[in-house]
Image (cartoon, rainbow over all chains, first blue to last red; front, side, top):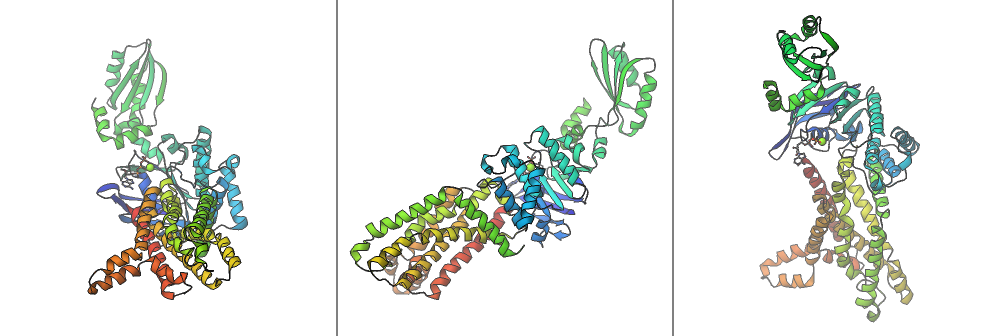
Length: 318
Length: 250
Ligand SMILES: Nc1ncnc2c1ncn2[C@@H]1O[C@H](COP(=O)(O)OP(=O)(O)OP(=O)(O)O)[C@@H](O)[C@H]1O
Ligand SMILES: [Mg+2]
Protein backbone atom coordinates (compact mmCIF):
# COMPACT_ATOMS: atom_id res chain seq x y z
CA UNK A 1 0.00 0.00 0.00
CA UNK A 2 2.81 2.40 0.86
CA UNK A 3 5.96 2.25 -1.19
CA UNK A 4 8.78 4.63 -0.41
CA UNK A 5 11.81 4.60 -2.66
CA UNK A 6 15.13 6.35 -2.02
CA UNK A 7 13.36 9.24 -0.35
CA UNK A 8 15.60 12.18 0.59
CA UNK A 9 15.02 15.63 1.94
CA UNK A 10 17.52 18.44 2.36
CA UNK A 11 16.64 21.63 4.19
CA UNK A 12 19.24 23.86 2.60
CA UNK A 13 22.47 21.99 3.25
CA UNK A 14 20.97 20.11 6.19
CA UNK A 15 20.15 16.49 5.49
CA UNK A 16 16.92 15.53 7.25
CA UNK A 17 16.09 12.30 5.40
CA UNK A 18 18.62 10.38 3.35
CA UNK A 19 17.71 7.59 0.94
CA UNK A 20 14.93 5.97 2.93
CA UNK A 21 13.37 2.93 1.24
CA UNK A 22 10.63 0.70 2.63
CA UNK A 23 7.21 -0.76 1.94
CA UNK A 24 4.18 -1.30 4.08
CA UNK A 25 1.59 -3.85 2.95
CA UNK A 26 -2.04 -4.16 3.92
CA UNK A 27 -2.30 -5.84 7.30
CA UNK A 28 1.00 -4.44 8.52
CA UNK A 29 1.58 -1.98 11.32
CA UNK A 30 4.99 -0.39 10.98
CA UNK A 31 6.44 1.26 14.08
CA UNK A 32 8.71 4.14 13.25
CA UNK A 33 11.38 4.72 15.87
CA UNK A 34 14.32 7.05 16.14
CA UNK A 35 15.87 9.72 18.33
CA UNK A 36 14.64 13.31 18.24
CA UNK A 37 15.44 14.95 14.95
CA UNK A 38 16.05 11.62 13.20
CA UNK A 39 13.68 12.55 10.37
CA UNK A 40 10.53 10.60 11.29
CA UNK A 41 8.14 13.49 10.96
CA UNK A 42 9.84 14.72 7.82
CA UNK A 43 9.45 11.28 6.22
CA UNK A 44 5.78 11.18 7.17
CA UNK A 45 5.22 14.67 5.81
CA UNK A 46 6.64 13.53 2.50
CA UNK A 47 4.45 10.41 2.45
CA UNK A 48 1.36 12.52 3.04
CA UNK A 49 2.35 15.12 0.48
CA UNK A 50 2.87 18.06 2.80
CA UNK A 51 6.57 18.38 2.01
CA UNK A 52 7.97 17.83 -1.46
CA UNK A 53 10.95 15.44 -1.39
CA UNK A 54 14.32 16.57 -2.68
CA UNK A 55 14.55 13.23 -4.45
CA UNK A 56 12.93 9.81 -4.42
CA UNK A 57 9.36 8.69 -4.85
CA UNK A 58 6.29 7.79 -2.81
CA UNK A 59 3.48 5.52 -3.99
CA UNK A 60 0.29 5.18 -2.02
CA UNK A 61 -2.19 2.53 -3.11
CA UNK A 62 -0.46 2.39 -6.48
CA UNK A 63 -0.67 6.13 -7.09
CA UNK A 64 2.51 8.12 -7.49
CA UNK A 65 2.18 10.99 -5.04
CA UNK A 66 3.95 13.46 -7.29
CA UNK A 67 1.84 12.61 -10.34
CA UNK A 68 -1.59 11.94 -8.84
CA UNK A 69 -1.49 13.71 -5.51
CA UNK A 70 -5.26 13.90 -5.00
CA UNK A 71 -5.86 10.21 -5.75
CA UNK A 72 -3.02 9.23 -3.43
CA UNK A 73 -4.13 11.56 -0.65
CA UNK A 74 -7.67 10.28 -0.82
CA UNK A 75 -6.47 6.93 0.52
CA UNK A 76 -4.50 8.39 3.41
CA UNK A 77 -5.56 9.36 6.90
CA UNK A 78 -2.95 11.54 8.58
CA UNK A 79 -2.41 12.61 12.16
CA UNK A 80 0.32 15.26 12.11
CA UNK A 81 2.72 15.76 14.98
CA UNK A 82 1.17 17.99 17.69
CA UNK A 83 -2.32 17.18 16.39
CA UNK A 84 -3.34 20.53 14.87
CA UNK A 85 -7.05 21.34 14.62
CA UNK A 86 -9.05 24.42 13.68
CA UNK A 87 -9.36 26.32 16.93
CA UNK A 88 -12.34 28.37 15.83
CA UNK A 89 -14.67 25.37 15.44
CA UNK A 90 -16.44 22.95 17.72
CA UNK A 91 -15.30 19.35 17.74
CA UNK A 92 -18.42 18.38 15.85
CA UNK A 93 -17.98 21.13 13.27
CA UNK A 94 -14.36 20.15 12.78
CA UNK A 95 -15.18 16.50 12.24
CA UNK A 96 -17.99 17.37 9.86
CA UNK A 97 -15.58 19.51 7.89
CA UNK A 98 -13.03 16.69 7.83
CA UNK A 99 -15.66 14.28 6.53
CA UNK A 100 -16.94 16.67 3.88
CA UNK A 101 -13.54 17.47 2.52
CA UNK A 102 -13.03 13.73 2.06
CA UNK A 103 -16.16 13.68 -0.08
CA UNK A 104 -18.66 12.40 2.50
CA UNK A 105 -21.93 14.31 2.31
CA UNK A 106 -25.27 14.25 4.02
CA UNK A 107 -26.18 11.07 5.87
CA UNK A 108 -22.84 9.41 5.08
CA UNK A 109 -21.09 12.35 6.69
CA UNK A 110 -23.18 12.22 9.84
CA UNK A 111 -22.74 8.47 10.15
CA UNK A 112 -18.96 8.82 9.78
CA UNK A 113 -18.83 11.54 12.44
CA UNK A 114 -20.96 9.46 14.78
CA UNK A 115 -18.72 6.43 14.30
CA UNK A 116 -15.45 8.20 15.11
CA UNK A 117 -16.98 10.05 18.03
CA UNK A 118 -17.73 6.67 19.57
CA UNK A 119 -14.39 5.13 18.65
CA UNK A 120 -12.41 8.01 20.07
CA UNK A 121 -14.67 8.74 23.07
CA UNK A 122 -15.48 12.30 22.12
CA UNK A 123 -19.14 12.49 23.19
CA UNK A 124 -18.33 14.62 26.22
CA UNK A 125 -16.65 17.38 24.21
CA UNK A 126 -18.67 17.21 21.03
CA UNK A 127 -20.01 20.76 21.31
CA UNK A 128 -16.93 22.27 22.89
CA UNK A 129 -14.66 24.63 20.99
CA UNK A 130 -11.39 23.06 19.90
CA UNK A 131 -9.26 25.78 21.49
CA UNK A 132 -10.68 24.98 24.93
CA UNK A 133 -9.92 21.25 24.72
CA UNK A 134 -7.31 19.63 26.91
CA UNK A 135 -4.25 18.34 25.09
CA UNK A 136 -5.39 14.72 25.15
CA UNK A 137 -8.82 15.54 23.82
CA UNK A 138 -7.37 17.65 21.06
CA UNK A 139 -5.14 14.77 20.16
CA UNK A 140 -8.10 12.41 20.04
CA UNK A 141 -10.07 14.88 17.94
CA UNK A 142 -7.29 15.07 15.39
CA UNK A 143 -6.90 11.30 15.48
CA UNK A 144 -10.65 10.97 14.85
CA UNK A 145 -10.30 13.21 11.81
CA UNK A 146 -7.65 10.90 10.38
CA UNK A 147 -9.82 7.78 10.45
CA UNK A 148 -13.15 9.40 9.62
CA UNK A 149 -13.16 8.26 5.99
CA UNK A 150 -11.96 4.74 6.81
CA UNK A 151 -8.77 5.08 4.73
CA UNK A 152 -6.61 2.21 3.49
CA UNK A 153 -3.47 3.91 4.72
CA UNK A 154 -2.91 5.56 8.07
CA UNK A 155 0.06 7.75 8.85
CA UNK A 156 0.15 8.63 12.53
CA UNK A 157 2.85 10.84 13.99
CA UNK A 158 3.06 10.02 17.70
CA UNK A 159 -0.61 9.05 18.07
CA UNK A 160 -0.42 8.35 21.80
CA UNK A 161 1.47 11.49 22.75
CA UNK A 162 -0.28 13.28 25.59
CA UNK A 163 -2.91 10.63 26.27
CA UNK A 164 -3.65 9.20 29.70
CA UNK A 165 -2.82 5.51 30.27
CA UNK A 166 -6.38 4.35 29.62
CA UNK A 167 -6.59 6.27 26.40
CA UNK A 168 -3.15 5.07 25.32
CA UNK A 169 -4.45 1.56 25.77
CA UNK A 170 -7.63 2.26 23.80
CA UNK A 171 -5.81 3.90 20.94
CA UNK A 172 -3.29 1.07 20.74
CA UNK A 173 -6.12 -1.44 20.62
CA UNK A 174 -7.72 0.59 17.89
CA UNK A 175 -4.51 0.77 15.87
CA UNK A 176 -3.88 -2.95 16.21
CA UNK A 177 -7.42 -3.77 15.24
CA UNK A 178 -7.42 -1.40 12.25
CA UNK A 179 -4.02 -2.74 11.26
CA UNK A 180 -5.61 -6.01 10.21
CA UNK A 181 -7.08 -4.50 7.09
CA UNK A 182 -5.09 -1.30 6.61
CA UNK A 183 -1.50 -0.35 6.12
CA UNK A 184 -0.43 1.71 9.11
CA UNK A 185 2.75 3.57 9.83
CA UNK A 186 3.12 5.28 13.17
CA UNK A 187 5.97 6.90 15.01
CA UNK A 188 6.54 6.68 18.72
CA UNK A 189 9.09 7.14 21.46
CA UNK A 190 7.42 4.53 23.65
CA UNK A 191 9.13 1.23 23.02
CA UNK A 192 6.46 -0.88 24.72
CA UNK A 193 4.15 0.26 21.97
CA UNK A 194 6.27 -1.57 19.47
CA UNK A 195 5.48 -4.85 21.21
CA UNK A 196 1.89 -3.94 21.84
CA UNK A 197 0.99 -2.86 18.34
CA UNK A 198 3.56 -3.36 15.60
CA UNK A 199 4.05 -6.20 13.21
CA UNK A 200 7.30 -4.57 12.14
CA UNK A 201 9.57 -1.87 13.47
CA UNK A 202 12.00 0.43 11.77
CA UNK A 203 14.64 2.54 13.44
CA UNK A 204 15.84 5.65 11.70
CA UNK A 205 18.79 7.73 12.75
CA UNK A 206 20.11 10.93 11.19
CA UNK A 207 17.85 10.40 8.20
CA UNK A 208 18.88 6.81 7.47
CA UNK A 209 17.16 3.51 8.15
CA UNK A 210 19.43 1.67 10.56
CA UNK A 211 17.22 -1.29 11.47
CA UNK A 212 14.09 -2.83 10.02
CA UNK A 213 12.44 -6.05 11.14
CA UNK A 214 9.89 -7.68 13.40
CA UNK A 215 10.14 -6.74 17.07
CA UNK A 216 11.65 -10.19 17.77
CA UNK A 217 14.31 -9.74 15.12
CA UNK A 218 15.24 -6.36 16.52
CA UNK A 219 15.41 -7.74 20.01
CA UNK A 220 17.89 -10.34 18.91
CA UNK A 221 20.33 -7.53 18.17
CA UNK A 222 20.35 -6.73 21.83
CA UNK A 223 23.19 -7.71 24.13
CA UNK A 224 20.47 -9.01 26.43
CA UNK A 225 19.15 -11.45 23.89
CA UNK A 226 19.72 -14.94 25.36
CA UNK A 227 21.35 -13.60 28.51
CA UNK A 228 20.82 -15.74 31.59
CA UNK A 229 20.18 -14.25 35.02
CA UNK A 230 20.55 -16.25 38.21
CA UNK A 231 19.81 -15.53 41.84
CA UNK A 232 22.38 -17.47 43.85
CA UNK A 233 22.59 -18.00 47.60
CA UNK A 234 25.38 -19.25 49.76
CA UNK A 235 28.36 -18.44 47.52
CA UNK A 236 30.75 -15.49 47.40
CA UNK A 237 30.94 -13.09 44.52
CA UNK A 238 34.47 -14.04 43.63
CA UNK A 239 33.79 -17.74 43.53
CA UNK A 240 30.83 -17.20 41.26
CA UNK A 241 32.78 -14.91 38.98
CA UNK A 242 35.59 -17.39 38.67
CA UNK A 243 33.37 -20.39 37.99
CA UNK A 244 31.08 -18.79 35.47
CA UNK A 245 33.80 -16.78 33.85
CA UNK A 246 35.40 -19.98 32.66
CA UNK A 247 32.45 -20.95 30.49
CA UNK A 248 33.49 -20.36 26.86
CA UNK A 249 30.04 -19.35 25.63
CA UNK A 250 29.83 -16.55 28.23
CA UNK A 251 31.17 -13.25 26.97
CA UNK A 252 30.68 -11.08 30.01
CA UNK A 253 29.26 -11.22 33.51
CA UNK A 254 27.36 -8.59 35.43
CA UNK A 255 27.21 -9.20 39.16
CA UNK A 256 25.18 -7.50 41.88
CA UNK A 257 25.20 -8.67 45.45
CA UNK A 258 23.19 -8.05 48.57
CA UNK A 259 23.80 -9.52 52.03
CA UNK A 260 23.09 -13.14 51.20
CA UNK A 261 21.99 -13.05 47.58
CA UNK A 262 24.06 -12.63 44.40
CA UNK A 263 22.38 -11.77 41.14
CA UNK A 264 24.49 -12.67 38.11
CA UNK A 265 23.72 -12.00 34.52
CA UNK A 266 25.72 -13.90 31.94
CA UNK A 267 25.80 -12.31 28.52
CA UNK A 268 26.49 -14.88 25.80
CA UNK A 269 28.75 -14.62 22.81
CA UNK A 270 26.46 -13.62 19.94
CA UNK A 271 27.19 -16.81 18.00
CA UNK A 272 26.81 -19.16 20.97
CA UNK A 273 23.48 -18.04 22.37
CA UNK A 274 21.96 -21.51 22.09
CA UNK A 275 24.68 -23.09 24.26
CA UNK A 276 24.74 -20.68 27.12
CA UNK A 277 21.76 -21.86 29.16
CA UNK A 278 22.90 -25.47 29.03
CA UNK A 279 26.49 -24.54 29.91
CA UNK A 280 25.36 -22.55 32.89
CA UNK A 281 23.07 -25.27 34.12
CA UNK A 282 25.99 -27.67 33.98
CA UNK A 283 28.37 -25.31 35.74
CA UNK A 284 25.96 -24.50 38.56
CA UNK A 285 25.01 -28.03 39.49
CA UNK A 286 24.91 -28.34 43.25
CA UNK A 287 24.62 -24.57 43.79
CA UNK A 288 21.80 -23.00 45.65
CA UNK A 289 20.10 -21.29 42.67
CA UNK A 290 16.90 -19.52 43.68
CA UNK A 291 15.80 -18.37 40.26
CA UNK A 292 16.96 -18.54 36.66
CA UNK A 293 15.67 -16.42 33.83
CA UNK A 294 16.50 -16.24 30.17
CA UNK A 295 16.21 -12.75 28.74
CA UNK A 296 14.50 -12.12 25.43
CA UNK A 297 16.49 -9.04 24.61
CA UNK A 298 15.52 -5.47 25.25
CA UNK A 299 14.36 -2.98 22.68
CA UNK A 300 15.64 0.01 24.60
CA UNK A 301 19.08 -1.58 24.58
CA UNK A 302 18.89 -2.16 20.82
CA UNK A 303 17.68 1.37 20.33
CA UNK A 304 20.60 2.79 22.29
CA UNK A 305 23.18 0.60 20.59
CA UNK A 306 21.99 1.45 17.16
CA UNK A 307 21.48 5.16 17.59
CA UNK A 308 24.37 5.80 19.98
CA UNK A 309 27.17 3.64 18.57
CA UNK A 310 29.86 5.48 20.54
CA UNK A 311 28.40 4.88 23.99
CA UNK A 312 27.58 1.28 23.17
CA UNK A 313 31.20 0.69 22.18
CA UNK A 314 32.40 2.33 25.38
CA UNK A 315 30.10 0.20 27.51
CA UNK A 316 31.28 -2.97 25.83
CA UNK A 317 34.91 -2.09 26.60
CA UNK A 318 34.29 -1.46 30.27
CA UNK B 1 -15.34 14.95 -4.96
CA UNK B 2 -15.76 17.72 -7.50
CA UNK B 3 -13.72 20.88 -7.43
CA UNK B 4 -16.78 23.01 -6.81
CA UNK B 5 -17.79 20.78 -3.92
CA UNK B 6 -14.34 21.08 -2.33
CA UNK B 7 -14.29 24.83 -2.78
CA UNK B 8 -17.72 25.06 -1.21
CA UNK B 9 -16.63 23.00 1.80
CA UNK B 10 -13.63 25.28 2.38
CA UNK B 11 -15.74 28.36 1.83
CA UNK B 12 -18.34 27.23 4.33
CA UNK B 13 -15.72 26.54 6.95
CA UNK B 14 -14.09 29.93 6.47
CA UNK B 15 -17.37 31.82 6.66
CA UNK B 16 -18.39 30.04 9.84
CA UNK B 17 -14.93 30.76 11.25
CA UNK B 18 -15.48 34.48 10.63
CA UNK B 19 -18.77 34.59 12.42
CA UNK B 20 -17.71 32.40 15.32
CA UNK B 21 -15.45 35.20 16.53
CA UNK B 22 -16.39 38.80 17.31
CA UNK B 23 -13.84 40.08 14.80
CA UNK B 24 -16.32 39.88 11.93
CA UNK B 25 -18.91 41.98 13.72
CA UNK B 26 -16.33 44.49 14.87
CA UNK B 27 -15.09 44.77 11.33
CA UNK B 28 -18.54 45.38 9.90
CA UNK B 29 -19.36 48.00 12.53
CA UNK B 30 -16.10 49.86 11.93
CA UNK B 31 -16.62 49.75 8.19
CA UNK B 32 -20.14 51.15 8.49
CA UNK B 33 -19.15 53.83 10.98
CA UNK B 34 -16.26 54.96 8.79
CA UNK B 35 -18.53 55.12 5.79
CA UNK B 36 -21.16 57.12 7.62
CA UNK B 37 -18.71 59.52 9.15
CA UNK B 38 -16.72 60.21 6.02
CA UNK B 39 -19.70 60.45 3.70
CA UNK B 40 -21.80 62.79 5.78
CA UNK B 41 -19.25 64.69 7.88
CA UNK B 42 -16.01 64.85 5.94
CA UNK B 43 -17.24 64.24 2.42
CA UNK B 44 -19.73 67.06 2.61
CA UNK B 45 -22.58 64.98 1.24
CA UNK B 46 -25.22 67.55 2.15
CA UNK B 47 -23.22 70.58 1.02
CA UNK B 48 -22.73 69.11 -2.43
CA UNK B 49 -26.46 69.28 -3.04
CA UNK B 50 -26.30 66.51 -5.64
CA UNK B 51 -28.27 63.28 -5.60
CA UNK B 52 -25.33 60.93 -6.22
CA UNK B 53 -22.77 58.90 -4.29
CA UNK B 54 -19.89 58.86 -6.76
CA UNK B 55 -17.75 61.35 -4.86
CA UNK B 56 -18.94 61.78 -1.31
CA UNK B 57 -19.30 58.04 -0.64
CA UNK B 58 -17.20 55.95 -3.02
CA UNK B 59 -14.17 58.27 -3.05
CA UNK B 60 -13.20 57.00 0.36
CA UNK B 61 -13.36 53.33 -0.41
CA UNK B 62 -9.82 52.89 -1.75
CA UNK B 63 -8.60 54.34 1.55
CA UNK B 64 -10.88 52.37 3.86
CA UNK B 65 -9.93 49.18 2.12
CA UNK B 66 -6.26 50.02 2.50
CA UNK B 67 -6.52 49.16 6.20
CA UNK B 68 -9.63 47.07 6.49
CA UNK B 69 -9.00 44.51 3.76
CA UNK B 70 -5.50 43.52 4.96
CA UNK B 71 -7.08 43.14 8.40
CA UNK B 72 -9.53 40.64 6.94
CA UNK B 73 -6.96 38.84 4.82
CA UNK B 74 -4.01 38.70 7.20
CA UNK B 75 -5.20 35.59 9.03
CA UNK B 76 -6.09 33.58 5.93
CA UNK B 77 -2.82 31.65 5.60
CA UNK B 78 -0.67 33.05 8.41
CA UNK B 79 -2.98 31.55 11.00
CA UNK B 80 -3.10 28.15 9.29
CA UNK B 81 0.66 28.10 9.39
CA UNK B 82 0.87 29.25 13.01
CA UNK B 83 -1.68 26.75 14.33
CA UNK B 84 -0.35 23.97 12.11
CA UNK B 85 -3.63 23.30 10.33
CA UNK B 86 -1.88 24.08 7.06
CA UNK B 87 -0.47 20.58 7.33
CA UNK B 88 -3.97 19.16 7.61
CA UNK B 89 -5.40 21.29 4.85
CA UNK B 90 -2.66 20.55 2.33
CA UNK B 91 -2.71 16.80 2.97
CA UNK B 92 -6.45 16.57 2.32
CA UNK B 93 -7.50 15.17 -1.05
CA UNK B 94 -7.92 18.60 -2.62
CA UNK B 95 -5.68 20.68 -4.83
CA UNK B 96 -3.99 23.72 -3.27
CA UNK B 97 -5.82 25.78 -5.85
CA UNK B 98 -9.19 24.70 -4.47
CA UNK B 99 -8.11 25.69 -0.98
CA UNK B 100 -6.84 29.06 -2.20
CA UNK B 101 -9.98 29.86 -4.16
CA UNK B 102 -12.27 28.67 -1.35
CA UNK B 103 -10.56 30.80 1.26
CA UNK B 104 -10.37 33.81 -0.99
CA UNK B 105 -14.02 33.52 -2.01
CA UNK B 106 -15.15 33.30 1.61
CA UNK B 107 -13.38 36.52 2.55
CA UNK B 108 -14.50 38.26 -0.59
CA UNK B 109 -18.13 37.38 0.11
CA UNK B 110 -17.65 38.67 3.61
CA UNK B 111 -16.37 41.98 2.25
CA UNK B 112 -19.36 42.00 -0.11
CA UNK B 113 -21.66 41.60 2.86
CA UNK B 114 -20.04 44.52 4.68
CA UNK B 115 -20.38 46.61 1.54
CA UNK B 116 -24.00 45.62 1.05
CA UNK B 117 -24.78 46.71 4.59
CA UNK B 118 -24.05 50.31 3.58
CA UNK B 119 -27.46 50.28 1.82
CA UNK B 120 -28.93 52.95 4.16
CA UNK B 121 -26.73 55.45 2.34
CA UNK B 122 -28.45 54.51 -0.90
CA UNK B 123 -31.84 54.79 0.75
CA UNK B 124 -30.93 58.24 2.07
CA UNK B 125 -29.89 59.60 -1.26
CA UNK B 126 -33.03 58.17 -2.86
CA UNK B 127 -35.13 59.80 -0.19
CA UNK B 128 -33.50 63.18 -0.69
CA UNK B 129 -33.49 63.23 -4.46
CA UNK B 130 -33.63 61.03 -7.51
CA UNK B 131 -30.16 59.67 -8.21
CA UNK B 132 -29.22 57.41 -11.10
CA UNK B 133 -29.34 54.06 -9.32
CA UNK B 134 -27.60 52.36 -12.23
CA UNK B 135 -24.55 54.51 -11.59
CA UNK B 136 -24.67 53.64 -7.91
CA UNK B 137 -24.91 49.93 -8.66
CA UNK B 138 -21.95 50.13 -11.05
CA UNK B 139 -19.93 51.91 -8.42
CA UNK B 140 -20.81 49.22 -5.90
CA UNK B 141 -19.63 46.53 -8.32
CA UNK B 142 -16.41 48.46 -8.84
CA UNK B 143 -15.90 48.88 -5.12
CA UNK B 144 -16.36 45.16 -4.55
CA UNK B 145 -13.94 44.29 -7.36
CA UNK B 146 -11.42 46.68 -5.87
CA UNK B 147 -11.75 45.07 -2.44
CA UNK B 148 -11.14 41.70 -4.13
CA UNK B 149 -7.89 42.99 -5.61
CA UNK B 150 -6.71 44.20 -2.19
CA UNK B 151 -7.77 40.92 -0.65
CA UNK B 152 -5.86 38.83 -3.17
CA UNK B 153 -2.74 40.86 -2.39
CA UNK B 154 -3.31 40.20 1.31
CA UNK B 155 -3.46 36.49 0.46
CA UNK B 156 0.09 36.69 -0.89
CA UNK B 157 1.50 38.42 2.17
CA UNK B 158 -0.44 36.11 4.45
CA UNK B 159 1.02 33.05 2.76
CA UNK B 160 4.52 34.45 3.23
CA UNK B 161 4.56 34.49 7.02
CA UNK B 162 3.10 32.92 10.12
CA UNK B 163 2.83 36.30 11.76
CA UNK B 164 -0.41 38.14 11.12
CA UNK B 165 1.03 41.54 12.00
CA UNK B 166 3.83 41.18 9.48
CA UNK B 167 1.31 40.05 6.92
CA UNK B 168 -0.87 43.08 7.63
CA UNK B 169 1.95 45.59 7.30
CA UNK B 170 3.32 44.08 4.09
CA UNK B 171 -0.08 44.05 2.54
CA UNK B 172 -0.87 47.66 3.52
CA UNK B 173 2.37 48.72 1.90
CA UNK B 174 1.61 46.78 -1.29
CA UNK B 175 -1.94 48.16 -1.49
CA UNK B 176 -0.68 51.66 -0.78
CA UNK B 177 1.48 51.37 -3.84
CA UNK B 178 -1.60 50.50 -5.91
CA UNK B 179 -3.36 53.59 -4.61
CA UNK B 180 -0.49 56.02 -4.85
CA UNK B 181 0.18 55.02 -8.44
CA UNK B 182 -2.93 56.97 -9.38
CA UNK B 183 -2.99 59.56 -6.64
CA UNK B 184 -3.02 63.04 -8.22
CA UNK B 185 -0.01 64.43 -6.28
CA UNK B 186 2.08 61.47 -7.38
CA UNK B 187 0.97 61.78 -10.98
CA UNK B 188 1.76 65.49 -10.96
CA UNK B 189 5.19 64.69 -9.68
CA UNK B 190 5.77 62.16 -12.44
CA UNK B 191 4.45 64.52 -15.07
CA UNK B 192 7.23 66.94 -14.25
CA UNK B 193 9.51 64.47 -16.02
CA UNK B 194 10.58 65.25 -19.60
CA UNK B 195 8.20 64.29 -22.41
CA UNK B 196 9.88 61.06 -23.42
CA UNK B 197 9.21 59.69 -19.92
CA UNK B 198 5.50 59.83 -20.59
CA UNK B 199 5.40 56.02 -20.91
CA UNK B 200 6.49 55.73 -17.31
CA UNK B 201 3.59 57.87 -16.19
CA UNK B 202 1.25 55.70 -18.25
CA UNK B 203 2.72 52.51 -16.91
CA UNK B 204 2.45 53.62 -13.31
CA UNK B 205 -1.06 54.97 -13.57
CA UNK B 206 -2.21 51.84 -15.37
CA UNK B 207 -1.52 49.99 -12.13
CA UNK B 208 -3.57 52.36 -10.07
CA UNK B 209 -6.75 51.19 -8.47
CA UNK B 210 -7.93 54.78 -8.32
CA UNK B 211 -7.70 55.24 -12.07
CA UNK B 212 -9.56 52.00 -12.68
CA UNK B 213 -12.13 52.66 -10.00
CA UNK B 214 -12.97 56.17 -11.22
CA UNK B 215 -14.78 54.79 -14.26
CA UNK B 216 -17.07 52.72 -12.06
CA UNK B 217 -17.67 55.77 -9.88
CA UNK B 218 -19.00 57.67 -12.87
CA UNK B 219 -21.17 54.72 -13.82
CA UNK B 220 -19.02 53.61 -16.73
CA UNK B 221 -18.55 49.86 -16.87
CA UNK B 222 -15.36 49.60 -18.93
CA UNK B 223 -14.26 46.04 -19.65
CA UNK B 224 -10.61 47.11 -19.31
CA UNK B 225 -11.23 48.13 -15.71
CA UNK B 226 -12.99 44.87 -14.93
CA UNK B 227 -10.18 42.93 -16.57
CA UNK B 228 -7.64 44.91 -14.56
CA UNK B 229 -9.15 43.98 -11.20
CA UNK B 230 -9.75 40.39 -12.21
CA UNK B 231 -6.19 40.03 -13.43
CA UNK B 232 -4.79 41.45 -10.20
CA UNK B 233 -6.89 38.86 -8.35
CA UNK B 234 -5.87 35.94 -10.55
CA UNK B 235 -2.22 36.89 -10.59
CA UNK B 236 -2.15 37.30 -6.81
CA UNK B 237 -3.87 33.98 -6.17
CA UNK B 238 -1.44 32.31 -8.52
CA UNK B 239 1.47 33.90 -6.65
CA UNK B 240 -0.07 32.66 -3.42
CA UNK B 241 -0.06 29.11 -4.75
CA UNK B 242 3.59 29.40 -5.75
CA UNK B 243 4.52 30.74 -2.32
CA UNK B 244 2.62 27.99 -0.55
CA UNK B 245 4.41 25.39 -2.63
CA UNK B 246 7.90 26.75 -2.10
CA UNK B 247 7.43 27.64 1.55
CA UNK B 248 6.33 24.07 2.11
CA UNK B 249 9.45 22.68 0.51
CA UNK B 250 11.83 24.64 2.68
N1 LIG C 1 11.16 23.14 7.92
C1 LIG C 1 12.39 22.76 8.31
N2 LIG C 1 13.46 23.53 8.02
C2 LIG C 1 14.69 23.16 8.41
N3 LIG C 1 14.98 22.04 9.06
C3 LIG C 1 13.98 21.22 9.37
C4 LIG C 1 12.62 21.53 9.01
N4 LIG C 1 11.82 20.53 9.44
C5 LIG C 1 12.64 19.64 10.04
N5 LIG C 1 13.92 20.05 9.99
C6 LIG C 1 15.09 19.31 10.53
O1 LIG C 1 15.05 18.01 10.02
C7 LIG C 1 15.48 17.08 11.00
C8 LIG C 1 14.44 15.99 11.16
O2 LIG C 1 13.32 16.52 11.80
P1 LIG C 1 12.01 15.66 12.13
O3 LIG C 1 10.99 16.60 12.62
O4 LIG C 1 11.69 14.83 10.95
O5 LIG C 1 12.53 14.75 13.32
P2 LIG C 1 11.73 13.65 14.13
O6 LIG C 1 12.40 12.36 13.88
O7 LIG C 1 10.30 13.73 13.85
O8 LIG C 1 12.04 14.10 15.63
P3 LIG C 1 11.08 14.07 16.93
O9 LIG C 1 11.28 12.72 17.54
O10 LIG C 1 11.69 15.12 17.81
O11 LIG C 1 9.70 14.35 16.52
C9 LIG C 1 15.71 17.88 12.27
O12 LIG C 1 17.09 18.07 12.40
C10 LIG C 1 15.02 19.17 12.03
O13 LIG C 1 15.67 20.22 12.68
MG1 LIG D 1 8.63 14.14 14.93
